[in-house]
Amino acid sequence: MRRSKKGNAMIVDIRIYTCKPHKAHEWLALYKDVAWPLQKKYLGRCKGWYTTVEGQLNTVIHLWEYDSQADREARRGAMAKDPEWQAFLAKGRALGAMISQENRILAPTDFYLADSTP
Figure (spheres, rainbow, N blue to C red):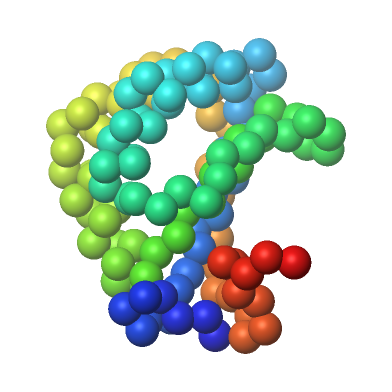
């Protein structure tokens, strides 16, 4: 298993959001203006932000790397206490864009090194 710089088992949190048709762009604009700066501040290592081009449309996917599950919980817990984050969540609920939200915690295989180049 890949280890973080601190020697812990590194994990990736993949978050998959499905938006109502014609609402994804509105939600992404809200996220970009309000939540993106907060998540960069609290969560740190974003590994990517994507929207679907083919397949299930209106889907937003983002990935965050953490040193461990404890690191993830501490970072997300600190962010959850921030009044600006709570304001973003309220605005998101008012927008009514989400159909579903899913997240998965991934651990790398022992043969993959994310920082290696093919």
